[in-house]
Length: 196
Image (cartoon, rainbow, N blue to C red):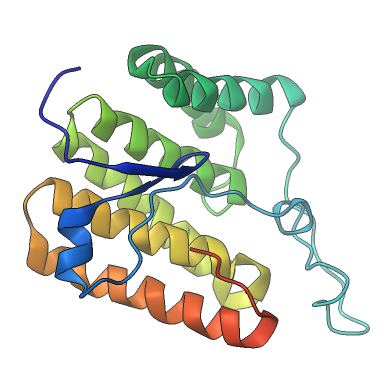
């Protein structure tokens, strides 16, 4: 594979542990993951248990099953080590996203996040930063009005920390990684499990 990759320990689908970044956050969590939006959140709704009574939620524009399938195929290719195929498929997804979705949409955030992961996996670390930053911006906006997006915000922040770490920018990697850890800890206190 092009470019030297830092050692990783696979934890579960799409997540990796980076020892170098862990040292930077004094053994905090450092996981790389796609933004796996909850079905209710992806449709612009909070899960029933979290939705305030009487609140009407606006649905986000639906994504065609063929696009969702292409994104899933990209992740499967990446998980199997075919980074080139994953990147090509994700670029197809992004072409549809850019032509059809509004600037703030959960699927756009997830697609950009995955694009950043795949670019980094191909050794294109500098090119991976802009989509990761954009994914974070969108996810932060979504989380402002819907707490169901907080786990995704933590993942987006953590992935930004990884992108900075990949570029050797350890000082820039620390703040988003610590913010992700803070969000995850707050969520764990509220509902009893980690999300990052």
